[in-house]
Every structure is written in C-alpha cells, then in structure tokens.
Image (cartoon, rainbow over all chains, first blue to last red; front, side, top):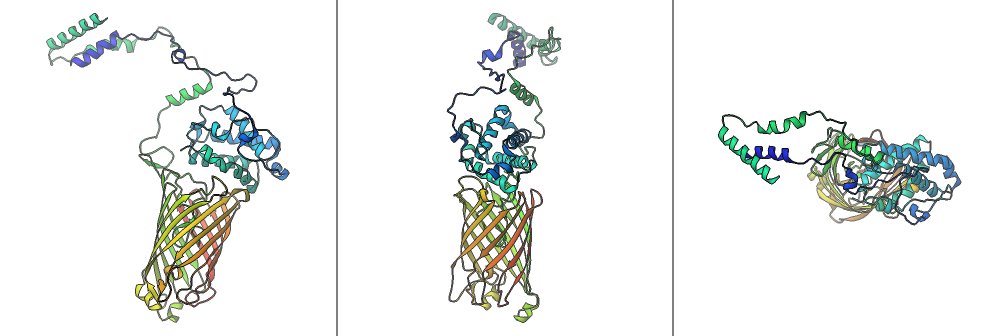
Length: 177
Length: 348
C-alpha cells in the first residue's frame, strides 16, 4: 500500500529532462558525413596496397572475359552486395555498414584478383571484418549470394570456382566465431 | 524538494492508513493519469538523424520481434539454448552422400566430411536409403546419421544382402539374406573441406563397429568373428581452382566383404586398406566422379577391390540423389559383379 503510493508521488515530483535535449551531444555521438562526391563515409587512415586484397591475382584473359571484363565484374560485385543486404540470414551484418564503399572495394578486389587490371584500395581482410562477428554460416550465405550473382551474369561454373578459390583461404581472417 | 516529498509521502501514508483496506487507494491513477492523457502542446521534437544508417537502426529497433523466440529464430530451425537444431547452413553437397556403411562420403568410400547440414554450434540429421543391383546379388541399406557442430558424426545403418539364386548354389537357401549393422563415429581433427588454406584438407578419424547378424553362418564360412571394428583416417578437400574434390582414406580393417561375411579368419586379421575418390563439380548441385576401394581377401574367396563411377545431384537443399555404376568384382566366388547403385539422402 505504501510502496505504490510512494512511487506515484516520486513520479509526480521527478523532473522531466528539458525538451529538445541534444542527446547525441550529451552522449558524445559523432555524426559522420558522407563524401559529397563519392557518397562514402570516411574511414580511419590506413596504408593502401594491393597486398590488402589477400591473394595474388590470376593472369588469364579468358577468365576476365568469362566475367564480362571490368564492367561485368563491377556488376557482379554490386549484385552480390545487394543480394547479401536483402538476405535475411546476413542482412543484419550490413545494417550499419557503408554499402557504397563496400560495393566499390569488393568490385576492386574481384577485379584485382581476377587479373582485370584494377588496384585494390580497401583495407586488408582482417581489418575490414574486425569486430563484425562473422561466422562460417555467414560466409556460406555470402558465397551463395556471390554464386547467384555470377550465375545471373552467365559466368561458367568452373570460372566461378576460380574466383571462390582466391576467396576461400581468406576465411580464417574473416570468420571470428 | 526533499521536504515536499517527505510531506507528500507522509500525507499519502496518513490517507492510506485512515482509508483502511476497504477503499482502494486511487492516488497512483490521480498522480499520472493527467500526464498520459495530456495532449502534447507541440509536435514532438524529431530527433536529429545523423544519416540513413540511424534511420535503418531506428526502424529495426521499433519493429516487433516477430516469430523469434527461445525455440525458434524464424528461419525454419529450432534453437535450444545456444544449439541450433536442423538449422542447416552448409554449402550444397559439402555434407557428402551416404556410403554403403552409412557414413558421410561418396558412395563406397568414406570421406573426411561430417554429415548433416549443421554449421558450428548446430546439430544436423540425415537419413538415407541405398539399393545396389548386381548380376547375382541385391543390396539394400538404410540408416540415419547425426552431425554435431561440424565436428562429430554418429551413424547407424543396416545392410541387407540378398543372395537370390546364389543362396541355393551355396547351399544356404534360395534368397538367403545376410544382414550387417554398422555403428559409425567420425571426428574432424583439422582443416576444412572448402575454406582455409588450399593445401590443408579436412582431416577426420573414425571407427566403424560392425556386427554381422549371421554369426553361425559366417563362422562356418571361415570367419574368426561375427563382429569387428574398422579404424579410418580420411583427408578430403575441394580444390576450387580446379572444381575438383579429392579424397584419400586409410582403413585398418579385418572385415570380409565389409563384414557381411564376418571378420578375420583363422590365419589372418587386420589389414591396411585404401579408399580414394576424385570428383568434378559441374555446378553447385551436381558432381560426377570415380572411387576406388581396396579390399583384403582374408577368407581366400577371391574378394576384389571395388570401384564406382558416380553422379550426385542435390535436387533441393535437403534431398540428394546419387546414381553410380559399381564394379564389385568377385563376391563369394561369384565373379564380375557389376551393376547399378542408387541412393537417396535427406539431410537437415
């Protein structure tokens, strides 16, 4: 009897915070602004190197042709990211992720690894996936999305596997749990 | 503030005491009802949104939890605590297909793969039925397999080997059927079939404990025992750059025709044997290949090595069909046992 009454009284006398409080400022939330040209969010500086792509590139004109050249590779990378983003198994991983940048760096990585003459400007695989808590099941889901994108683009299965062969050994730097 | 609050508390307390238990205390409703009912005087301030990520996070935070519960994550599997039951997640065909001994493998050779479609932290289940038709014999086998955490595989299977007309010729009766129970366990030690360094295969050790259900007959044929245990060491890798799957298994065994004809003989026991498989991936769903399995000839009946040419197709995520041409050589002195192998496997 006493406790609800006391609670009620305390609710009356409790001061509400001032309206219009800037909670981001109160809690020190920093807002990143997208680059007006590229549309990408800024990242902490890192050393750029093709070694960050995680594997040595192929040297095969036929393989590049199978993927539809640089344009085809860029489309496949973009499509993979779109499929992953709408895949209920792994969508949550990408929720707070800069998808504009991911599409560009993934495209560069595929292009570099397939020997289509791009430079990879992204971070290395460990840094890029740090703290994301990626599981092997997540990897499998992404592989399936990439396979779908390559299949839609008409890439022969053996050529699909050659790209996967470059990516598969990177799993130990990506899978965290 | 403190003074007021203690005053109010005292008042309430006094009121409550005087009112007694007959009249319910209405003070809480009086206290906060106006706050709830009050129309906001101005439109609520919309928080400053940093960017679209925040919007996505906010939308997600406001969404109802949906079917998610302690027992389900809404994706078909069942979850008990941290263990995913029948959630799946393996890439197609990477759980292998059932062997004649009920293990995960390629048909006649055991592989280093772990059956079931579970991922780390999960439990999977698979079941199979296999039929082999040979000129003089028929084989039927069926079994179930439990996969734990992509680490451990436990399997039970039964094989029925129908001697048809040969039964009469051997004097054991028309259509005499040998029966063999196999209890298998396999533990993945290292490596991964698909991921990791391309030079490091998935390596697994295992046992297959087999019990013939024709104890008197197999002893009469010359076998030393009606039960025995095989020990296996397997290494299996999918070489993606070539779309090729390679498997090598060492088997330490004393089984005669897998154990259908018992184990060992008066003069001979365990032998080290080899099982090799080569597969080529045509698509995510289809693989073709060949297997070779060496066999000991402990009973001196001219037991031959086995080989098969197989094609496996994953009709759905859960159903895989395997068809093969098998050459099982001489069985119980009846030579040239070549025929067809058909197997269906469902896996979760």
